[in-house]
Length: 95
Image (cartoon, rainbow, N blue to C red; front, side):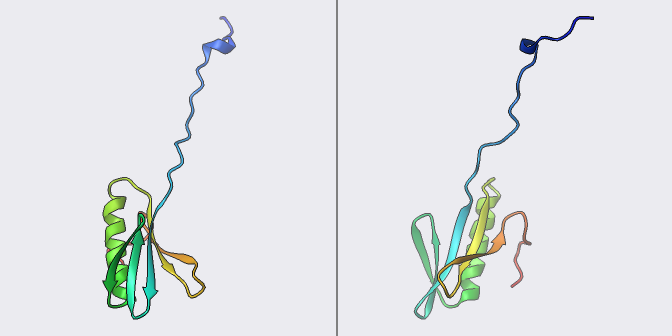
């Protein structure tokens, strides 16, 4: 039996390219709520619950296309806090 040589083996790369998540940001502005996504603003929504509902619905639809999506609520310090992630959290969401 002959020994395999180094050039007899083919290197296979098993890592997939890094996919950047698609964010839907829900934030207040005065008395209204907005959704920021892809450089645009959507709304106005009457309250946080309504804005979250529409953001999660949009993120779910985009996630079904194979995208990594999540919804973030902007906290009082201005930092995003992830509140829903496609494939991890239930849909329809209960909040």
